[in-house]
Amino acid sequence: MNRTIPLQWLAGGAGLLAMAGCASSEAPATNQPNVIYVFPDQYRNHAMGFWGEEGFREKVNFRNDPVHTPRLNEFARQSLVLTSAQSNCPVSSPHRGILLTGMYPNKSGVPLNCNSSRPISSLRKDVTCLSDVFSQAGYNCAYFGKLHVDCPTPNDPEHPGAYVEERVPAWDAYTPKERRHGFDHWYSYGTFDVHKNPHYWDNEGKKHEPHEWSPLHEAAQVVSYLKNENGVRDPKKPFFIMVGMNPPHSPYRSLDDCMEEDYNLYKDQPLESLLVRPNADATMEKAACTPYYFASVTGVDRAFGQILDALKELGLEKNTIVVFTSDHGETMCSQGINDPKNTPYAESMNVPFLIRFPERIKPRVDDLILASPDIMPTLLGLAGLGDQIPETVQGHNYAELFINAQAQVARPNGALYIQNVDGKKDDQGNVITYHPSSRGFKTAQYTLALYIDRKHQLTRTLFFDDANDPYQMHNIPLEERPEVVKEILAQMGSLLKEIDDPWYKEGILSEMIPY
Image (cartoon, rainbow, N blue to C red):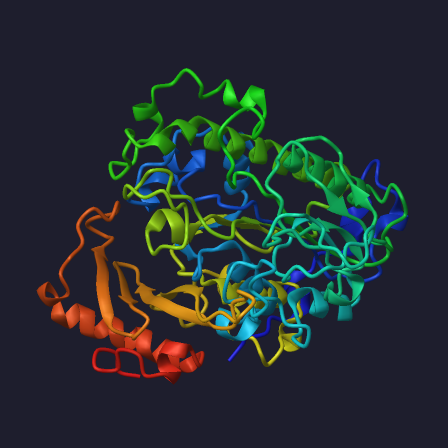
């Protein structure tokens, strides 16, 4: 059951906005807090400098990446910082589907990364999304940057009947007004990985090509929106803003992908001094990408800081909930694999989650295992909209726990891991089903994942004691800890049943998993 927090506990007064340099007309008519949700793509939890600082390093059992993130370091000391936020299905589109709907991939409509050959993977039109709820509650809602939850269709505004790109299958997409789920301000695209030549479609479907590194351009657009420079929002309404930055997502191979001033911080350092995780293989070809990935991290930090500066300048800081997180992580040569995501490894599943709500959320570090479906109901709860959380939401509202670390709220004992791949195809090569290739469970101490073939037979297992093996270097045979495995499988089976997952519905590995 979702818990609701009385609005008067949470919302700051409109008078907070009447600061020097901020016109009183900018104050919203209600006390509802503003919300800004910033989520760069492929940003792992370990790539934040503050994890190496006093007050943070003793809260985790890993060594942080040697990255320069001064703005995040400062922001962390003003925020609730979670050590164990988990991306349940650590791939771009499935996570975004979960984020927007509060539903797992089997219900959100987005079980796979979206492209034109996967019509079965596209955000449901009939579901009430996070932005729908905010819009219905009287918020101005704005989306900036990468969306990647719609199956591309031939709906290019400038070339009707054509896709927005020539690649087959098409990955990029234009989202028409009827599919924007309550967002009344639009500056977005599907997915397009040319970081210094991004493009966006605006409210009316006009394409913009700014020839600027995308996080900095998006930050400037957000600042303009906050300042209401073009009269794009009603200043008497609170606002909900989502910013889907693409970097540090690949490519990260050259100065075409990041800012030179950021790359200069890392270019002369030996790879061994950058790849500090003992499970990382510095001899891999991909290792040469490390300075560029870290440069992108630093650039995102600076872009995020520009948004924070604008909030402070405009007197909006105290009544605005700000979240910094990501849709999944990046392995970057850890575990000897090239795939940056879509695995149960910590580098892939464990994402940043920092949330600041001045005078309401006390800065601290917490080990809450936050799952992706929990984000939507928790944000709504913090905004005083807990009673408007849709019945379809499968996550839990932890707003009360965010406000009070001692709150009598049941904490989760773990988070699901979900991996899906293409299933059957039709005569045209379109994917018409998906194969639920792996399911697993992450607890405070362990990570367990089971993999199956197309006949639903077990093919391999991954089982790590994360408390004593934080870099997951020793895959434990299941028979070595049978009681622990039994308990984890019981917890996993219960949750798979609760969310009506394909593994439960089809009785997959029912001889092992007690559904």
